[in-house]
Length: 345
Image 1 (cartoon, helix red, strand yellow):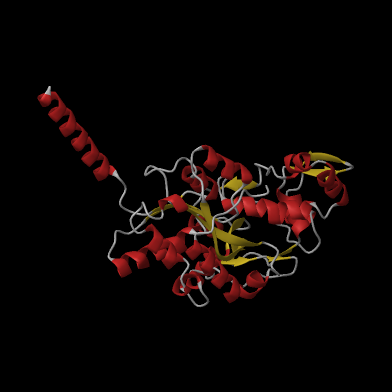
Image 2 (cartoon, one colour):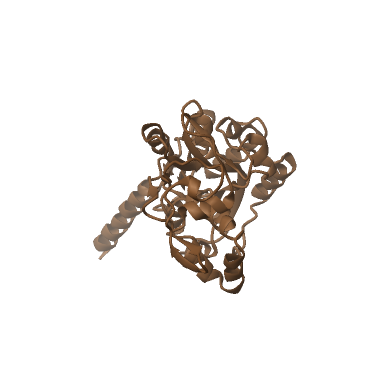
């Protein structure tokens, strides 16, 4: 009997040792392709400063990153989700269902979404309603929604070039696409009184009519924004949708359209004057802060003045830092471990 107990004890000890060995000993972040370059830089700096293992950072798209983040609270799921839009109520609920509670939401800065084209293309000043008329699968004609018939930019607005509407952009899992739909397509459609009336009476019906993009003029180009830039240089007359950072990185190859007469710049994005401006977020599992080695220090580095403050390396990566007072407030909230409530939508 003693021998059996000893064997069982030994087996348990071996199993426990194996489990301890299998436990993840590095920080894991995944999500937005827009936020990816910044978090990668934080990971490199963190590893250099601490001597710890470099965190794993994956570009999965905002939706893909949050879905994996919300999959569970254990080692098999990321500690951090990077996002180029706020977490949705449905995502928050999915997290809670899988035991992911006490989430820390960190706003790290701003970015703009641009409509870019090859430098040889004609200059464009596009109104928000033009984005809806060019790219929604259905548009309002003669009092009813019909399949979008427009083939040229010049058909939807005076002063726009007679070039073919052909736009390459991110897939449905991308936060950039979500933000483009909300800030560009939806806000543009709302400038048309009958569509605004539809939203006021039935928001679900409004989204069902306005949000689907036409598959003959909008091309899903994956999460690799650099690939979109390369496509624009090889496809004269085409346009691409991606974050301001990638424009900054490639302004020798592409130029950008004005939206409602405003060019995307550091100043117009920071002030919110540019219509397609958005906030960028990091979501952290508070329960993992003292379980994943280095996670607390990594989050501290991410919100430090050297990283996301004015003149920090977030700014070097083409993103726009928060106003100093808001940056200090968020640092204090992170230090206190303040967690988010359920989003309104």
